[in-house]
Length: 158
Image (tube, rainbow, N blue to C red; front, side, top):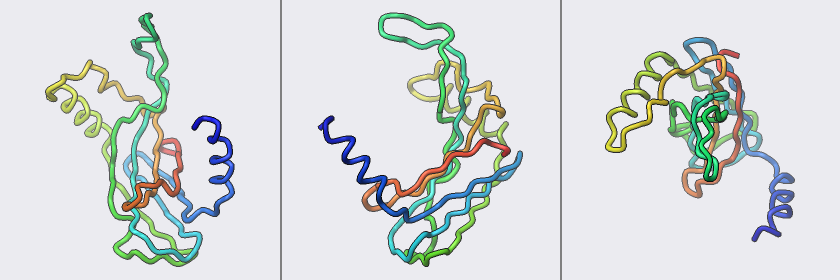
């Protein structure tokens, strides 16, 4: 219930983390380094996404139409969602680096094409990406329980 949230959050914040994530990027490559913080075993996946902030566009707000609403944390693309490692055993201090090559123009066009060609056609907001407002969000989740173990965010081209 709602009255239990603060206690549950406080308990979660006391837990030791299993992984740290470090993100860096340039205009064509994203590097994500996952570092195990303790000896552990498990079936984990790594997800890397692109998001965008400061998108000014229409939004329904209750009964009102807001023509210049500011949208933030808009998912633009999921670059990967795959096994963190070929092994299920991790040693404290172990680092796993994933290099992801990307073409922002091609990703944007793919987003536009998908929006225009789905059964429920998009609203025309799939394009006009602004790389200055984009971030990389990366997280590791337990593939069995679906619990998110760690998440980090960094500006694109940091």
